[in-house]
Length: 537
Image (cartoon, rainbow, N blue to C red; front, top):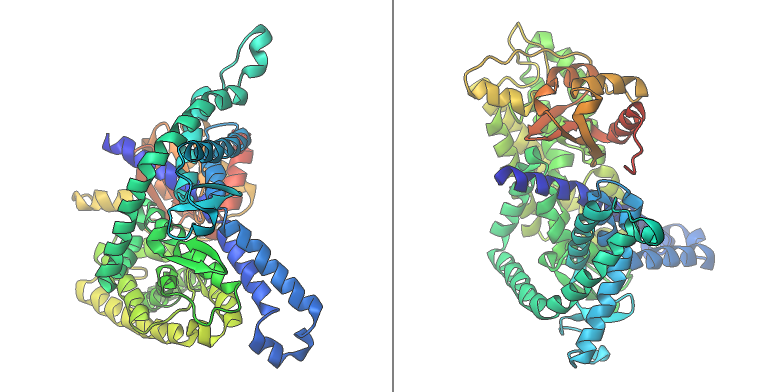
């Protein structure tokens, strides 16, 4: 039962990436739009003071806010697509139809029972306009629930076919036929149940706010601690896109979730200072500064004869962490061979967010330095206080460096460059760590760590995963190739790391995650092409 629950959570976490990874693009384009309407920038560069560029910036920022006001629909389609085992496009289309049926069913039921409030008094009523239809304000939860329900029904009946005159009702059309009564009944039930659930969510949000910096510390710490499981997305996503991360009225519209709020504030020039809720998306401070200090400590504590090799491994890892916020290559370098360092890293990550909050820093820093510059420079110092973010980052760079250097030397942790004479510099996998704990000796062998982007690496990857017949499904998130295998015992972790450039391998029941970093998309495509599989299947 436990394994089944974990498998389901991992599948859900993978599906969440479809809608979640789209939203930062909208945020960056809103930031670009702000460049053309920023008063300080226009004062510095007078040629920007013209109706063409200012109009373009206003239209660009304003148009993308529509994405934030329709997150329920976006999550519904995205999650249904991600969870579908086959015919993904049809699953997404069916989810869209189901979403429309739901909001109109709920609206009509509320109207029939005289439960609709005055449209002019929606604020604080628990109701909202969704695609122009007044319903209970379920926010992004509506999309998540309907996406999951649609995917389950789609996976059960997508291959159902009929004979003779009933042929036209088979396949995805039958899925929609089954979905209609379920969605209508669900809309009626939610009309009574959701107010109770919403009350619980509000109470949870109130509790978290009352715990103040302690709650923020737990949030930042757990978000890092769950990295090995791949479930860390389930920690921060509710705070970014639901009322757990705050509620604010901006420009006459109500926005829920830290990221939705600051995206809307970015597009509103009347906002002088970003809301406090932005702190829930300050997770990038340890990515840009802390882990860089940890890498410097690992380099300085490496054995003299291994420093050149350690540098060759650490520099690319530092670059991807600082610039893009991709941390797995660094974290996997000590996560399993020195778990205490990973715990320290997680704690420091939580503390760094608390420090930012204590200093009232409102800078946006979810990932790496590129995002940081694009978000904060156009907004200016007054609205974000971004120089303080950098100052705190430098402080934690030093703190990470000193703590890691002390602990590595004190306890003789076998971090990069400190391996025994019979070992070479490498990243350990979770399986090897567990073997080491049971008393077995972990033999470390590694080769070139540069990931091959060409399709020529696909045969080796497939072979190391147990062959084509062993691979059930292939997907990916931001940095990891995520697979379900018939027999995970056939995985050759050493080959994946040494010969295909994987930073780490995690095996949990039939779910396998192989960390390739930013090039994971090209790796997945090459594997699918080699297997002759259509990504839609």
